[in-house]
Length: 77
Image (cartoon, rainbow, N blue to C red; front, top):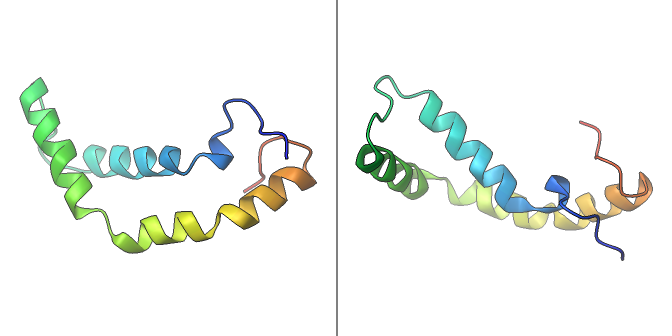
């Protein structure tokens, strides 16, 4: 399979970054310093549900098939 360059649809880590970003944005006290940001990111990483990671891994086959069906274009949501 040709791998589309820079395809977020086929890169599970993009979904992980999105999850962490949304969690950081939802905090009542957002991090202000680099140290606070680092600690907040570590906290969110530790709090990430294993189910999210498992779902991303298990969805790779379906996402690859869909990407092939749309000839490498973005997967519609």
